[in-house]
Image (cartoon, rainbow, N blue to C red):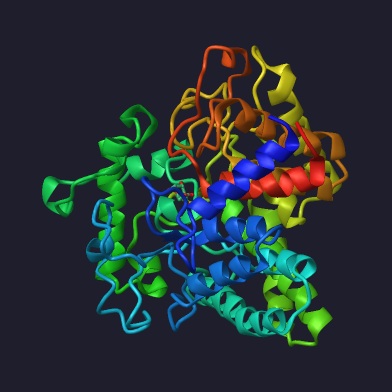
Length: 443
Ligand code: GLC
């Protein structure tokens, strides 16, 4: 496929997943609007449908709760019943903060919206709609960050926690395994449920039932706490300060500060959050032993020291020193050519680790939106060759296999494989392909 063909297919996929005022990640597997997916989708649309880019963000933030929480799923289409956990299971109807006429889940996802707005403001043509959109969205993103700092940072240290693996966006990463394994459950602890994901996608690529029982149990804790972050901080057995979530918060804080300065809006509060967050990120989340950033398990009181893709996103946040950035760049170079076999960049989990699985959801495969984050992060630190490699590896993968949700990272199996994994015709895959094509041309 040449550049124009990839771009054409990417645009057609985005338009095929567009529902009139928002997008679904993939028609069959994920039939609603997902929080951080929408941010990447808006970046993709900004290159050819500015009106859709703005509508995507508006429909997401219309579902924001009055306390600032931005839900991870917005269930726009109530006729779609073949999804679990569906709207009823989340039990958010009696939550006073939820907008009454909109159906949402009760947890959040990585805060990409600040840097997405910054990109849209740079890219969209000037218009009265654009100005109105900016003034509508900016305070809402600030309210989201304010909510994270108020509800998810109990000791005010500048790092926010997640209480469900799905909030990290890296749902089934082996990082969460030790903390999930610590949760002892009896059958009575688990509310009755029936999965659908493993009837649509290959069960070998999806989470196990051990994990799923714990996912459902943690939703139940959120529900019992009225989805109140302060109560959850006291009651949940699973509280993690995720490196990627916090790095994206830092990058989005930075975007809000830049935008505030450009458009004359107050950002003193954001500046304060940012100072604390950057300091805490650098002093708490770096592991000297494994030379990368790690997530911190607040219940066990220790870093989760496993090399994993989330920690590499620190570069995108911009807080690392040049030495730490160099260690991360070296790690990615080594994955590309310095291991027992070469990998497409970037495996989502370390291939030499016992828990690596090249086919399974977040346990090894390459994820398109992660390549976008890593490519931008490397570029920020001047690693332009490696940044281009992250872009062209992804473009080659989707040229070879199609616009899948994720891909096998083993390069020497390339000839034997015929497709990617998870859902097909995927929105963020298409969106980041368009954006990376714009920057790096054809693969
Ligand atoms: C999966 C991913 C999550 C994403 C969602 C929709 O659950 O792990 O990050 O937002 O699919 O694409």
